[in-house]
Image (cartoon, rainbow, N blue to C red; front, top):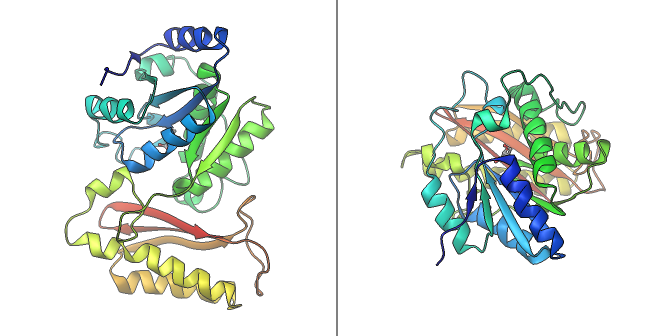
Length: 283
Ligand code: PAF
């Protein structure tokens, strides 16, 4: 298999995309922070099905990590990631340095109010501004027809859809279904941090959420179901639960207290040791 071409500057990325455009080709973008797994490769395949050439970006974005978080420890292996992307049919890897992405005097931040403020936004106050800023930059740099993001980061996807709409960015945002291991655990780069003892506990996250969603569907009161799901996670061995919340899928509004007729997304974040896992289920 031919090695995947890698560009490290915005100018080189734009030159390649412009050459494809002159040939009348459609371009897809899959933004990543590397440490790739089957979930990421499913995004590449989805982008491939909708476009002629897929660009993946690999950038561990410092502005979306708080000082106490795992930016330095975040797993990095560009050669492995590039080989996986080539195997999945990706046409180009954009792997900029921090200096290429952020001028020392950079002073513009994209912040999306409302949809980014609860749940992960409340637990990680500067996170979504970092994500929104870097995703806006990547979309401007690559100017793809389509960009694909995983539904595992369901709130992130809602934030990105909102900023694309609000800023009139000419790109179609596609959400890709969560890819799970056989035991139900949602694939995540951070699963690499889990110990052998953590792993069976981690799988309970999806089971607790699935059972809680069934209760909501059966008409049990939202607050009771959320509260009992938190208790179930703690009983299963999670050290701390940031949230379990039932929301409307598009706007991430809270559900009313009574039985819900419309679509529901149930989202959660919980800690196993220092590892923070997120997951969501819905219909
Ligand atoms: O989901 C991720 O991996 C990151 O948040 C993203 C979208 C690549 C932005 O850094």
